[in-house]
Image (cartoon, rainbow, N blue to C red; front, side):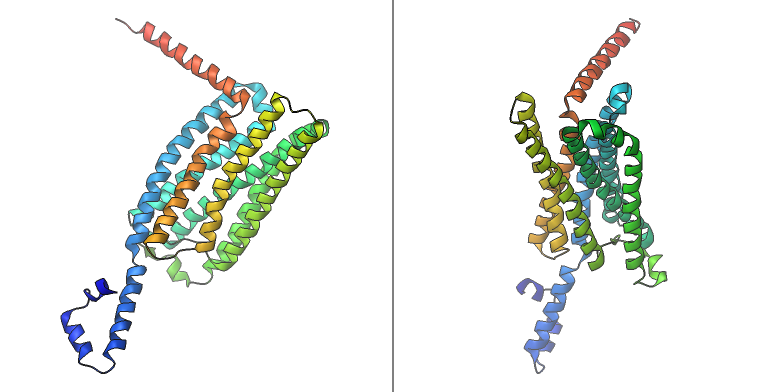
Length: 334
């Protein structure tokens, strides 16, 4: 509190010293200054600036890898028909969209764009929905892998016939859930406040109902992923032969679990802590966000280029690009 005392004028301090109960009044004044210092928007603006910068890097990296992988899949008729590659492309598009919307929202906060509250809520709500789509797609990918390994003959035709319905149904669930929570939270402030412009964009879906539903949704999808991986591991162990392919499958499952923990653990800490004041919590928030962003950048590599078929397609694609570039250089006039 010593440095806060220097923010008081000498006249105020003398007035407090000459009045009864001066210590209590001075303490209350310092507490008010401390509260103002704690709630000052400079911290949030600095945080938004750092997050926007990280999102820019993650967006360009994820978009580049996404474009390369989608190009490889579209050029191969066999890969284009497989459900796992359709889910992978959908997953990568969600990651790129999530990072791009993060650039927009955090950029609005960092630049003090003075946007209407409703616009801020819509941008943040869409980003949150796309983020849930990332986890939903991971759950579908885990279930599809389990069915392909444990029920290869029965599941092939079934999954192929309902793949687009399941994707559409997952987005209906996500959008319906978030729209209901959005209506619940937007009903609290008056309608005039919703259209009011704010320099620092506020967030939506941050109240107790949204946090509780978000935790349930997160644990539900996480349990599906963990159960699917456990059943895959048990099936491999039951087979009794751990050849090279089986050992690689075990390594893949372990890598996926580690990578998923980088996703989930920061989210759980975010939800548990909320927004707390202080340099320590500010630094902790940025560290957790850095881990989360790093996991987003690893997703295209782990779920995409770890695939042997995509590695082969990437090799052929790079050779084709180099060959075409060499031909174009040879055709240039001297």
